[in-house]
Length: 188
Image (cartoon, rainbow, N blue to C red):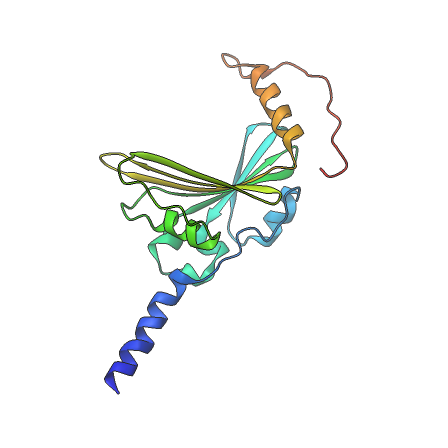
């Protein structure tokens, strides 16, 4: 009888860490206001005003089943927008030496490539339909940096626009020289 209780308690404790979590419930191209309405707690900033915006929240806000885990509490989720179109979703964890986010990303997206322990930095990148999934781990003496990113492959024109804007910034004054207007494709 005791071993059944141990098994049940073990499943309850392990279940949140093994749970599938839908971090990509909003398709690429979604507006920032739609994401803001769907996320209960968030912050935002615009690195280049009227060009790109980032909305950030905690992983446990997106995946309540991870609420009491280090992975849920200490992982930040960033939604990246260019011209108010969602182009990337990024998860960042840098407070633990355990590769929890890296391993979660592998399991979540069915990536079989293993971590190469001989490398201080490793990137695993796979194409998956209209997105690229990128797992990154960087091991430094004092911190292990882990990153999982979903990047749209349908918004190359927006990424090009952002790069042009970055090239036109006078970094001494933070002024942006005007560019020619862009024409977005119908999918964007």
